[in-house]
Image (cartoon, rainbow, N blue to C red; front, side, top):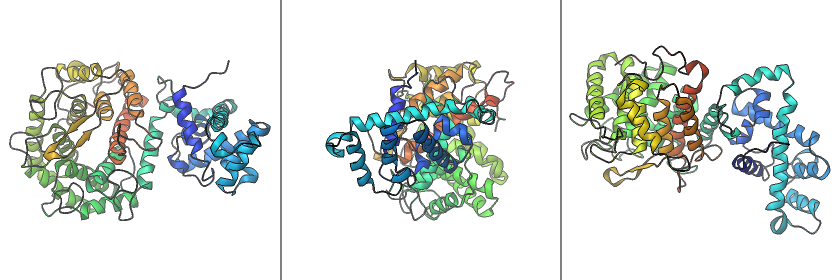
Length: 495
């Protein structure tokens, strides 16, 4: 009996196939499509191939499947839908009329075909694409390409979660596609105004994912952020003249550091110095960082971003080493002393514990080697248990809404909890990482992430790239903890 993939995965790919109808497959923006991650495509071109190469591979696979696996009217319907064969270059409206009448001469697209009949035709195409992988499995040359696929989430049954790395690459490709003409990245979703904070965060996330920070389009985005910095050397919420905030400044520092390491350009080192000075000078006395310094008490998430940024630039700025180290020491101690009795952290000292915030703290401490190995520390192990125990029935975690200075800031629960879990070194952590990936992928929309009940894409895509990159790093065979002698996320030298 033929094994049918889970319904959720079928729906994801059917929607992706449906998106090809209007432009036709040859004109569609396939680099953002989940279709380029189908096993038959990955096995044809290789896991590490660029989105463009996989897009071309998908077209080849689709052409072969339609020609060889679909019969008679099913084949003709697919050619009409995707503008293949004799239908290449034909307008979408002409193809829609033709495919409806192919199924029933009395049908129209709108009244009869575009719902259930269309779904059934697309399902046939998807199942044929899924079967096509079997035709490749006997080839020894293709067998070599299977090896990267096998090191991904084998324990996750759903094909949609099988290739964490390619989801990250597709999300990074989406970021490039939506870059605004001024060089900045959108504040909320495609077409929205450029925003210094969202641009800095996305650049940092892509650097964490291993994307080349020296790429011209990323340098252009970073220069846009730096050009819109304030006179106090901090980075504003949206644009020059808005108040400088910790989150944006820290993430801009991380993006600038990545660009400096890739290019060696002294300009970026000087900007690193400016942004570092802003963070050091705007730290709250004896604690961490407020979202907008000087107006409120320290916020836990803002403190995390400040710590991650300073820890990252410490080796590169020896002339500021003493000030940076002191700043890290004070903020790190504040974090450790604000942990609640239930082992979680709240948005501020004394606040009720929140899973999203707790995950972010674990990730931050792992970057700073603030604690020994995860599986031998009550402080860290208790926090990990806190996260695991507060999963919702559907496997996801609640997001946290911080409201510094009246602003609404979403701390993405699924992404931040996965970041925290990925910081663990417990020997049984891989199943938990897989579960975290499943939870996060519920917010994935093919090429970007979206917060629950919102239309925001930029911010959750930043967090999604960060979290999946951390998960992928842990799931790589050479990074798994079996036989680990002290390396990994908690094995960095102390600052």
